[in-house]
Image 1 (tube, rainbow, N blue to C red):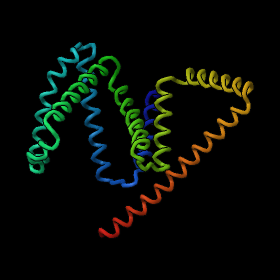
Image 2: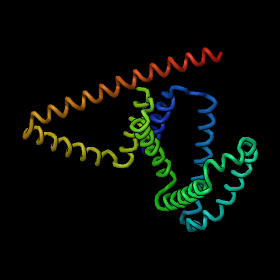
Image 3: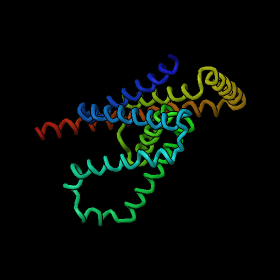
Image 4: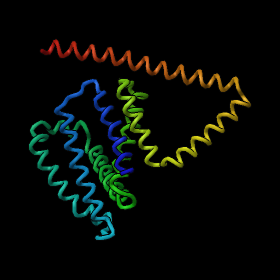
Length: 231
């Protein structure tokens, strides 16, 4: 029950962040939910293959289910991708880029199987949530991607749930007490610097929040104008 509560807390944060998306589309969201459910079934089946009952080697398990995935992807590509792709597209991308992409995908599949074998499919899924949070942060820093306040709130809940899942209540209290004691000692030694740090953090949070809300408002207005002109 405790594990279910921790995971549900993380899921709630991800759901809130999803509804904070500016261009939210219900059909796409439902397709995404279906993909997540199928992926969960696949990960559980892989974990069963790597469990103590079967004791299958990670590379051997990849040898069995990778061809099935390849056939499925090839079939779907014939329906959805091949009619839209031309030889010039392959030439623009480059053969070496495609080969490098295939090698990275293969290494990713191997690392995923090894991670499931060492931990569990649940840990892999939670790592995916942390990866998404880092991707959002990187996109904000590099490309200036717009993030709504609701998305920020949802990702904060998800990240808090991940920290609680990893550390637990006792260790979390211990770390908080240690940090509080160290911060108090630092404030006693350098009170002026402590006030400057607090002021700087507060100002930074205010600027980020104000900029995010302003960018969100502009993006929503632009999107509504685009929808109106399209209609």
